[in-house]
Length: 143
Image (tube, rainbow, N blue to C red; front, side, top):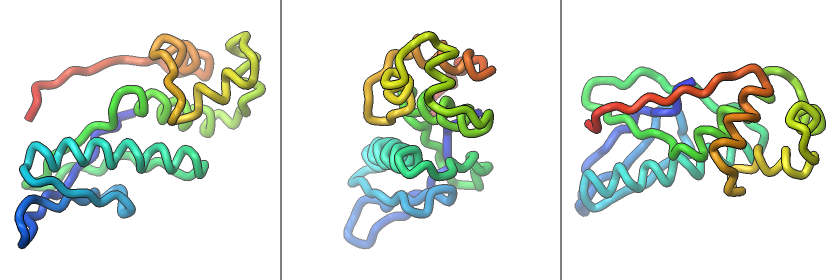
């Protein structure tokens, strides 16, 4: 699962850039400079992912970037929660079953799936393993 999405930066007539995501029509933001626009894009994307998890909605897979598009990654904590959310949906288990597999209370399992709760990466990795997933990390040169 990859959580780096293409973005379009459009110069604004009043200065700065408007940022849109082809995969996330509800996510629109802006910034005064290209760097600020990309920072704002990461925040906007994080909120869009969190809202979809809260609404129990689909999280789209990233499309391939087109010529001239940059990519923005979902912040790591939200990406881990999104991966767990998608894995739980795909396997069809509920929070009770997730809690049972992890040997924790259901309340703790719900927190692991809550995009606004600060869960530790190790706990999320363990939960991903419990639903048959393996976490790998890739670091790339910044573009």
